Image (cartoon, rainbow, N blue to C red; front, top):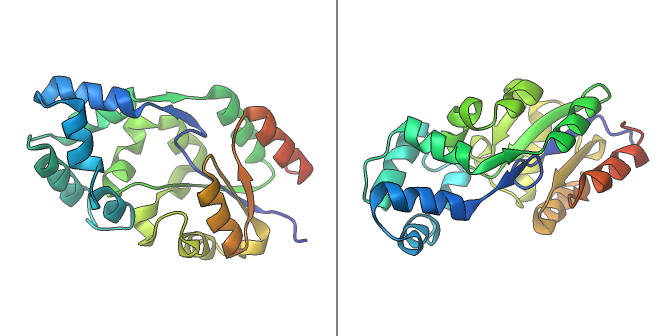
Length: 204
């Protein structure tokens, strides 16, 4: 088995706690519609999945679509601040990733549209610090997890074979997609489990 040289991480529920209900509550307070209405309007249809696969193709177009679905004019700063509030960094996991960065190349791959890419410095400064330009949303690759294509594309961008790459995500279906593409997968459930996985591959 080739030595793993490239490790790709999911963001939400791996590196950060992720509270969708808090986001809905903040939007409810802001625009005056119920949380259930907001959830159905924005996340109940095909729009978010399409955005995660690259349509709309720009942050501006994503924000315009989001505002239209909400029925409320929302600007970038407001959107980014709500996204920031619904996330909490997991310092123990982030520290493990920093240690890993001394032994392997790192990238981030989160199922999100192009607006989050622009908002990462506000929402997730630790991600920018650790991954730099290799912090990616799926929309950049015109495919979303668990499609094996997105994993092949991110590995190819950085010159790694899938056989020498690994992927960490909290969702079993996403990890299965990575493994179908040829990567080594780990379903995240705890920092201890992640440490064991990395240690088992002599990465930490």
